[in-house]
Image (cartoon, rainbow, N blue to C red):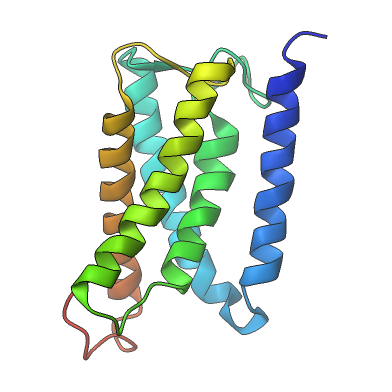
Amino acid sequence: MAYKVEKTILVSSWIVTLLLLIRFVPRDKIREAQIPFLFKQIVTWLFGLIVVEKGLIEYPYRLLFKKTYKGSFCFEYFIYPALCALFNLYYPEKRNAFIKGLYYFFHTSLITVFEIIAVKYTKLIQYKKWTWYCSFITIWITYYISRLYYRWFNKNQFSNALTP
């Protein structure tokens, strides 16, 4: 069976991500988690579509919508938005700038490392005119934008805080 490893990785990623959401999103925070989740879907759709259509990245194996969407539906519409929801729910709002920077760095690095491994050992993603540091930068920026949106949407809750 072709692409058995890739299919296993994608299905496992869905399951692990779903379990992370079930475990780490408290019932009283589900609505709060939906805000960055849905916002991130919009942002990743836009960036993902641009990157794929410009030929910077290619996804040779896709589990869903193989004939209609050239991007990685699994990553862009579920896995990455779910991680972003967790990022925003557990953001260290009352900590100093160094800790906040480390938080961004940790989350961005985690995704980037998994992407590098996927590029090197699977057919899930291929860089054409792209590099790991482009991914790192765009992931960081989209996390930052989602944080700004999350804070704006919950402005009453964050009225005393100054920085994202």
